[in-house]
Image (cartoon, rainbow, N blue to C red; front, top):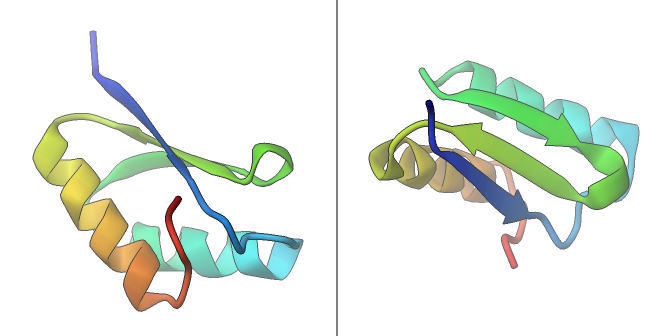
Length: 65
């Protein structure tokens, strides 16, 4: 079974923000799910993938709690 990591994104407030994060993550090899209602992104996989995801989210201009 895959590891599941949840990142909380402080400033993901709207559909546009969620789409920006989806776009940034889709350019990586990370398997993910964006949960706008929870202000969270679920990353599936190893810790190195979480690091890649965090970097992509920060580069897209968002703050991870």
